Length: 105
Image (cartoon, rainbow, N blue to C red):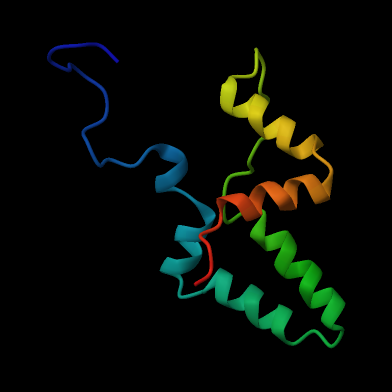
């Protein structure tokens, strides 16, 4: 974004064309609750698996999809220690944990 004073363009808070003329807004203006109708139709389905599939499909539109995070580069000291601990045999790991616990009185 350019620094300094802004010239031209939409005023702050003015909806863009897509938002201003959305189908949902028009339906709401006519008194039709699109989301409510969809949820009512799903609730009336007899098969619980069909209902679950519909809810899962709707959830895709509720939040942005998350991408996997790829880690590259060298391991730092903490990551190397974690890898070393993961490679330890279970009995050795349990003995190490016991030494870190406070003694019982």
